[in-house]
Image 1 (cartoon, rainbow, N blue to C red):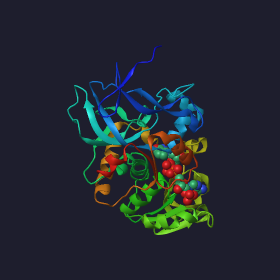
Image 2 (image 1 turned 135 degrees about the horizontal axis):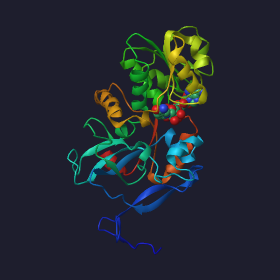
Image 3 (image 1 turned 180 degrees about the vertical axis):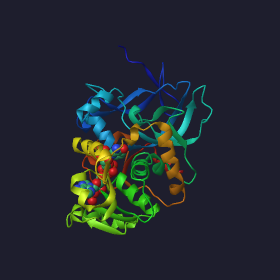
Image 4 (image 1 turned 60 degrees about the horizontal axis):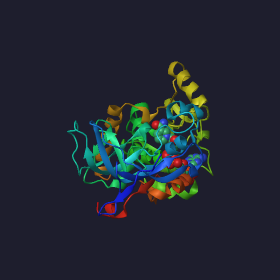
Length: 352
Ligand SMILES: NC(=O)c1ccc[n+]([C@@H]2O[C@H](COP(=O)([O-])OP(=O)(O)OC[C@H]3O[C@@H](n4cnc5c(N)ncnc54)[C@H](OP(=O)(O)O)[C@@H]3O)[C@@H](O)[C@H]2O)c1
């Protein structure tokens, strides 16, 4: 096919003669970070019920790594068999509305917004088009784009697990394993906010960081095995899946709950088993697959905490769009502290 000629407008932006183009990361297949390439592609056309967002900040998360590799393989049932059905990766975004569809009344051009595209991905790009009734919200004045873009990963997941699954209560004793990660760092702050006594687990290098998030006690997993303690915790939140319900059972108090966002076959069976047998429960949820209204409730419960400064987003590293493969390499190591973000235009961000 003959390539569409490209022109430049007065601001230097590239336009196709037949359609506007944008820079985006494109997945050329399943595999290592090299499958991700910066390309000039057609800007998504905004449908009648959609909002087009000019992205200021987007994210690279552990879920993005899973979607890039297409592993576990059963995920390809949803993602596409031989290569990702949606070729532009990235879920979290914050930016400005640059166009709205004819049916959209909730947003107008120029609104500062944030949200998550979930399985539709597409946010590692200059623009993304999202349904106006999807997970997209106006960004509160007190929140920066960096904070907002990372909200829908760790914080929303932590809220879902602690509040909805574990029904956290003031005065409970809560252990967070992987306390320096995206989910873990949000979970420590949230559990503290809910009035729990929080123990964080991380490596020696992150002990001070986890203390600064509000953990009363921090266990260096190189020195101590938290699963060896006896009837200590009402909730064990293994955010990184390095333990298991079987190993943690003895450390849970009577009626205690083990929650983990990392699903494996054993956890699946333990969940089903403990639904009917035993007073200690194992629970899992796929937060990104919850219906939008449920995720919006979780998000709306968090926004005031960020506005008030009760919670903060940990940003570990920032990369430009062209370095998304490098960001994936870093996230794949499983050692990030909080979140990794992609910043589109440093100038836009500084202006916030
Ligand atoms: N089900 C859901 O709804 C859902 C939603 C979001 C994420 N997830 C999943 O949840 C998992 C965690 O995501 P995340 O973004 O929070 O991960 P992450 O940010 O990559 O976690 C990194 C952290 O894990 C810590 N860590 C590494 N090995 C550890 C160990 N043996 N013991 C304790 N901590 C250890 C590291 O701390 P040190 O450097 O100190 O070791 C690092 O700070 C991922 O598998 C992700 O796919 C699921």
